[in-house]
Length: 187
Length: 107
Ligand SMILES: [Zn+2]
Image 1 (cartoon, each protein chain N blue to C red):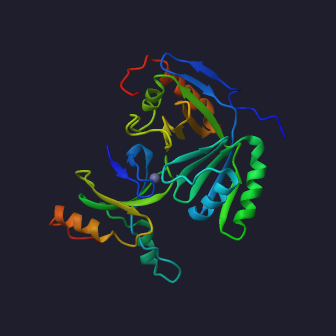
Image 2: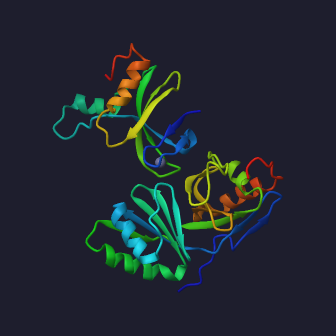
Image 3: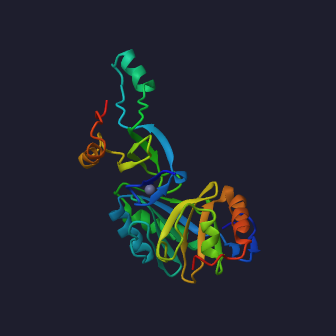
């Protein structure tokens, strides 16, 4: 396997409000088709529970995000992609579906710190109060001018994905929003 | 600011998450239609002050197309519904009639 490089070489930024880090590239598989059939197959391959509307589920190194009524995003270690695709292909043989390796399509960022929610609140038209958006939920929206999706992981950090082609833009706007002291309204 | 609820992912979308797709419920005029009908299908659009039905896409979100009924003057939203609907659902029509008794219905 080739030596996979993150789009920005693992860029990091320490702001007063939060720390922004470009994460190592993840393995990603886009799954489309009947949610029942795909859900069963992917649960079989990864152990992740089938996520309901706007949910994300985790099992070890695997995560399964609800992207739309007929689409899931499976995230896994890079070197598991081949195995997952093979297993999914076998389980789903005969049912109308799509399972594609899109690992090269996206960049992944981590936003951590007391002001992490505020960083996103400055960039997204989303209510980021903890009562409105919590762990286990994945939200597709935009940051400033580009599409993105984010969720809260086990460490209470925010993980964000966007297209790799706009990784520099995404990182720069995240850093800009992380510069200021947290206002302290979103915890 | 216009806020529409995406019927596919349930999010109350700020207008900036959405892309407008023009008038809803256009009937495609296919092969065999008259030139006039085809021209009307391509170019004739309602542009009412008041109740209007539109296509929207949750572009910065789940990516799905859906339909919305709203008032173009007051920005009041009467409801959103799935793109596979041939006509507005009865409960949305009822809601519009209750709030706009002089509405003449869809042309
Ligand atoms: Zn949606």
